Length: 90
Image (cartoon, rainbow, N blue to C red; front, side, top):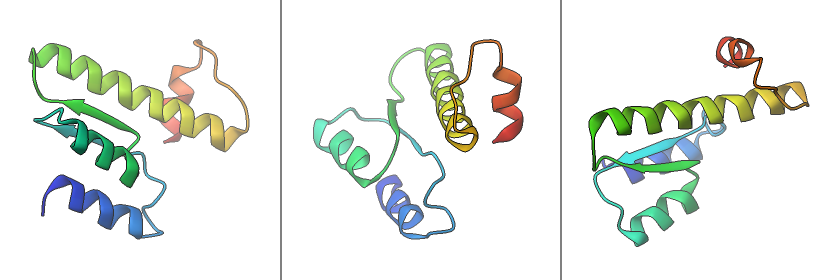
């Protein structure tokens, strides 16, 4: 099973359908990126480039998605002073 097929299975299962999904792939082919986002991934990040940059991109994407999920649950916005609340609520 490839990553796109896995994403489709995850999105079809109501138990897991609201889990944020970051697609981390080796290609930036426009048709793949479009299919991934259309299927329900929140972010697409390519594996190309410097590993430390990729780590930073993944970290930032995880943090942003956690903030969004926390804000949705709380019915409010999050300030920059509340990162601990985000990480402990997800």
